[in-house]
Length: 179
Image (cartoon, rainbow, N blue to C red):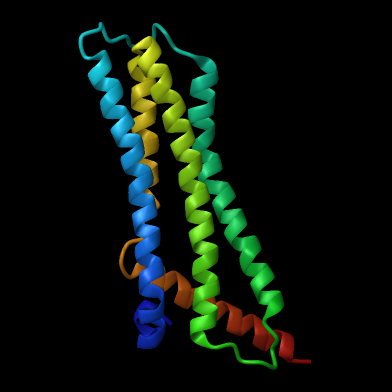
């Protein structure tokens, strides 16, 4: 089952929520980008430093956001999917729209959490860039901005994830049903 195999009614029901998630990711990225542009504007006339005014705590915060933004959302999504699998009775057939909606809720939560880690690290390093005019912090902030953008729910991709999870949930329910 791929995203195009979701029923049209399911795709239509999910569309507004997927659009909302897209808006959230773009808004998070634009917040970081706007603050970066303000920081650059404020420091435009100052000498730009490279490796001379590094703040280790801010670097650790920014670099630590990278694995946290990748691993924790995946763990949260998987945990939520396991909880959903336990709620689905093998004897009852949940509608595709209900399953897809629950899966999308889990995906939204994990996406926002991942973006929040990246955003926090980016803002921290932009503050350090504003105060120390250290380009390493600005570069790290832009790298984290790019990672926020990698979480953007592209058309079709969300539907593919949801369709795959529905298939997996139904297979697991079928396995529990067998003696």
